[in-house]
Length: 337
Image 1 (cartoon, rainbow, N blue to C red):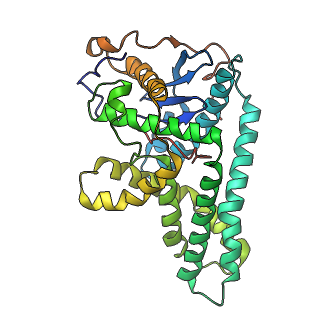
Image 2: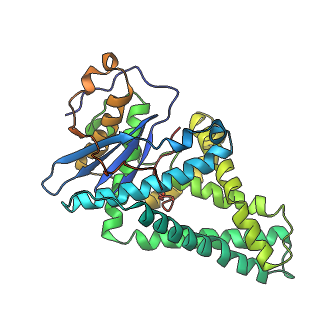
Image 3: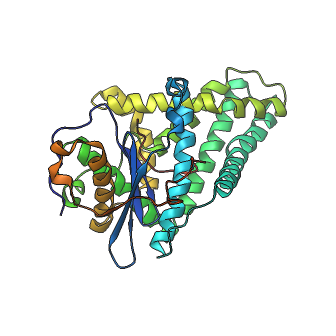
């Protein structure tokens, strides 16, 4: 059983993570850890450095720029962790996708996402020319885009495997809430917290959809090709603005106005999270504990030592090599940095 979390926190960093197959990945400033429940009931925890390339140049940390960088990094790391956790849960060797396979997965995922959430709505928007003004066309696109997303979430949430993934998503949120509230870092304490979190990737996607209506309305697109090109070209801008708003709202949840603004994102998380059981919460606690042990100085966290066995990645393991993945971005996960 985990002991109480130390009172001294890394106040300048917002911890986060995502659900994986039968487990949870948590991230700190320089370390990430993935905890996976094995078939025999034990928990395997592997810790590794976070990818270094997003911090290789100060420009990548600029506001608005860093949102796109974090999004790309999260998708790439998410693909790695999902692949690794699936192999561990199946009692295989924990093999990773090669760099080429990751690039291919990323390309296919982005291509499908652009088709369903950019090209298809743009076709309907172009069809409405002559019937609706610019704002009306973009509202039509936005409604269709959101409808496709909600329909996708509803369909996948019917699958038993996805429901378990969403329960681990809820466990990740609850444990992050417990840490941020300085509660005991244990399953029983985390269970009392909400499974909804204001920095969730689901809320990020909703922000992107809403802001897209406003941003796209500022540009005159005389033809279908120009309409599609404008929407694809503005995706990094949308990601940057949405990321900054998500981080800002996460720091100001005490404000009644902010709580009203983030409420739709929290409602949407009821589709992408489930109430976790005690075992799933234990996995999330193990993942966050492994990150905290690597982040907080030893004299400030003696009660965290030895709570979960941690395996360092071997050559070619889950964290080797440069990274190559809402929901897509995985639909779950809590934003960090």
